[in-house]
Amino acid sequence: MRILLFTGKGGVGKSTVAAGTAALAAAAGHRTLVLSTDAAHSLADAFATTIGAEPTQIAESLYAQQVDAQLRFEQSWADIQHYLLRVLDVAGVDPVAAAELTVIPGAEEVLALLELRLHALAGGWDVIIVDCAPTAETLRLLALPEALGWYMQRVLPVERRVVKALRPVLSKAAGVPMPEDTVFDAVERLHAELEEVRALLSGPQASVRLVMTPESVVLAEARRSYTTLSLFGYRVDGVVANRIFPDDAGDEWRAGWVAAQDTVLAEAGASFPGLPFWRSVYRAAEPVGVEALVELARDVYGDSDPLATPARGGPFKVVRTSRGAVLSLRLPGVTSADVDLARNGDELVVTVGSYRRLLTLPAGLTRYRVAGARVQDGELQVRMEDGTS
Image (tube, rainbow, N blue to C red; front, side, top):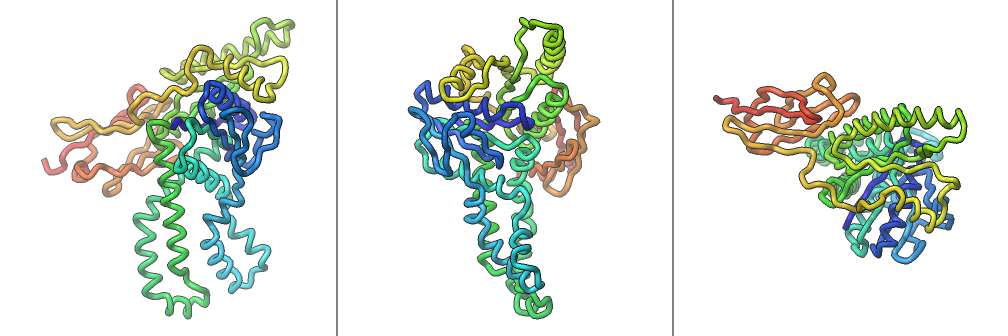
């Protein structure tokens, strides 16, 4: 099963390109599902039909779904929310306000991805294409499972034991109810489900495709997204440059836009070395409906296979040496000055800009020390050597 995620800055035509790719896959005979996890769904607009919270058949072999994030939120967050409501009730918070306070911002979008897990477990699909939220939300979403994993491994077990042992005393002293086992179970269940999603999306059959328009600001965000996705172990398999003015500009104003876009496109080509770089020209009419979307996708991908599996080998690897090992992490578009590296127990803490990833060292390397690090050809290389020698 091939899984493709589409993301990009808001307004670049991400949903249209995702819908076109799905329509082209279905036209080739693949049983295809395209689902939107973006809170501002627009798949129905692209296909010019009504799409529900369950897979809706659009054409032969083509199904679409706009995930009901509220429903997923209620299913996965109910036990936790009920506990929080009890705490706020004791504190005298108005019930309506309490209900709003127990909804974590962005949680609905995160939980919407759990729908992908259900479809993957059920089988029956050759291709699943995900129309994600704009890049900033998508990056936070994809970083969450690993961050939650750190909490689950180090904090939750201790917290659960303490609360279980001291629940009667704490409840009486604090005057508020302490969480029951069902609350901890719900957190653990949610983490397990999100971890399955992370494993799916970082696996060999999954990849992320960036959509951009030929504008300097959009290109800068696409480059940052490429770096950050690599930091968290997700493969980027290509870039689609959308809404390119045709060369036959008929007046000075359009000729100026063509020249400006050509400059950005040349820079974009150099920004993603080794990645397919597809182009989509501005069309005379907005591509709406299955036929128009298939035509768009055929023009974009040409003779290339839009479902080609990304090259083997993930962004993170370990190579043994005579003195220890070298850990390599692909970080395209950065220099040594952009990266901060620290050691914390059996973890390496890698910080790039405002994003931080905790890399747990393989068991055989925990006694090794960091002997040096550098960024070369878009790759962070950390040299580990035996600390006892």
